[in-house]
Amino acid sequence: MRAFALLAAFCVVLSGAAGPASAQPPEAPVAVPETPPGTPALMFADDPAIVNAYPTRPQFWSRVADERMVRLHFSTGTPECYGVSATVQESATDVVVDLRTGTLPGAVDRACIAIAVFGAVDVPLAQPLGNRRVLSLT
Image (cartoon, rainbow, N blue to C red; front, side, top):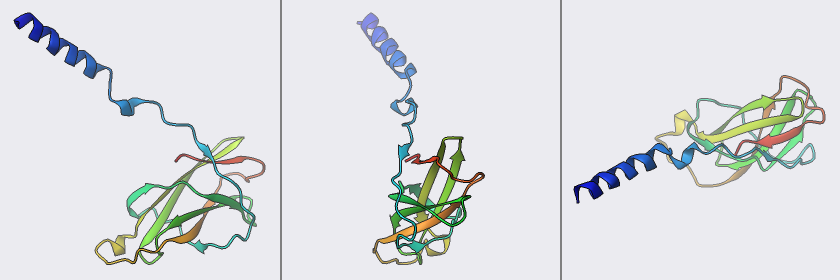
């Protein structure tokens, strides 16, 4: 019986050595569809100070007059309570965006209405967008 208990404990240790399921490689970025310039949206300013931020996949992207900028379109709550932050990784062929939405710091302890809005944020690029693909990390 003692040998069985020792063997069972050894198996448990070995199964833990395989690592958690979250150790799997991240999924590949997903293509974001383009929408025509001028698509109506409520403009948000990038605010890295948002709290309780969570990944948000842009629904669309559009070109703006400045080729070193891309506009990301998304759904979120009202701008009185909710904000957005975006980071970008660029290569010769792709622009990969990581869009996060969350609560504005000043709205953490405030009652906010639960209404969704179609928003957009302009994200600066190091190089002109050109023919590169726009992809989302989420």
